[in-house]
Length: 299
Image 1 (cartoon, rainbow, N blue to C red):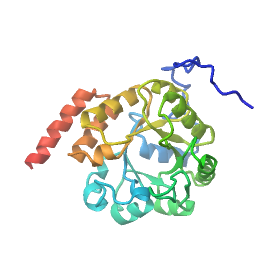
Image 2: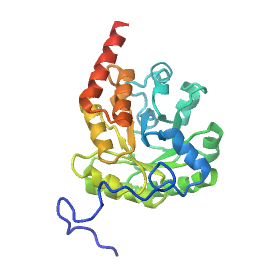
Image 3: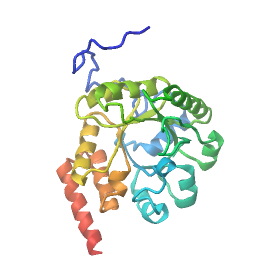
Image 4: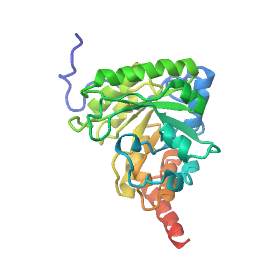
């Protein structure tokens, strides 16, 4: 049996070589050089080749919690601002019913589900046939992984089955690290969960930001990490979190509530994009948000 790293101090004694870039893989995304053309092309529809980063707009909340504030009418509130995001993360039902087929951005489709917020959430199954994903022309598939959860093994198996299917059709898989109420969102746990997803084949990973040691989480994961937006924060705080995440190695963000529950969603999406793709500092991005918000209010 491998030994747990219980002997490490609070900061750890492992050498992640933070700030040292991996060898040139022949492709702009970390760890992606060995994929075939189709998978690379799909990743390039999600991550901008010029910055190597992405701003994903997560609107898949309804798959387990029903109508969510800000997502009551995806067709009226999200479809108009969707083109400003690099990619949408959503369900197949929302894509078919509410997003125009002329949308040219990336599509990251939720492929796992089952229980609602009324049940144990970790008991998910694959809820999408890979051939339907091919039929819809999606660019990546997302699956929830509950490391440390009651149904951890089942969720990992969901991911590996999806990855196998993805390789058959050239579709990358996003491993989404779920954090239950009894688990701590610290660098040690997030480093464990993200590394497991990457080691088992996920082409990129979504996880939460932590205030201490996030740069070790990103350095220790051999594929791109996209930061999850999490709960709604004041706009300035959300921009600060996004800035810190990308400066500490994240390849972008996947924000939902911090955009669609903002008082000015389009303005917030523009401000987040400025942080992610232009390395704008939070104060500069918040000023852009405020200016655009005023323009909307006066219109």
